[in-house]
Image (cartoon, rainbow, N blue to C red; front, top):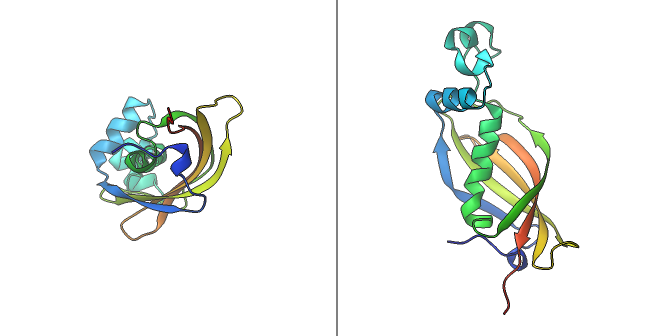
Amino acid sequence: MAGLYFEDFEEGKVYRHAPSRSVTDFDNIWYSCMTLNTQPLHINFDFGSKAGAHKKPLFNSLYTLTIVIGQTTMDLTRGTLLENMLLTDIEFPQSVFHGDTLYSKTTIGSLEESSEHQDAGIVELLHEGLNQDEVVVASCRRKVLIRKRDLN
């Protein structure tokens, strides 16, 4: 399934995305080490259990956000995204831990024509990541350049 074209987006529409994913210790350690984030709260169980606020390792918040945005791709931007333009208002109101399951939803914000690209428009997306208890664990606003439908 392809993503939506600019003309398909409706301001205020909410999408609940189907892909979900439980996160594991392996994911956390792999991503943290791959990105050179050696924060012991992510990769050291002993440190996390003794010095962490929750007495256990904390799942990497940037990986959480990446998963949440990734879950939206099939419904919204697969094959129609030209570029990410802006990412703002990033929040992590609740911690994520090994074994949590991530879900996501997106509310469509503003839509505007692109002054630089005749074949594309700018779409504002509000992404929210939720855990298995429907608690928001991550959110952000994202502006993307989306391809317009080819009318030729």
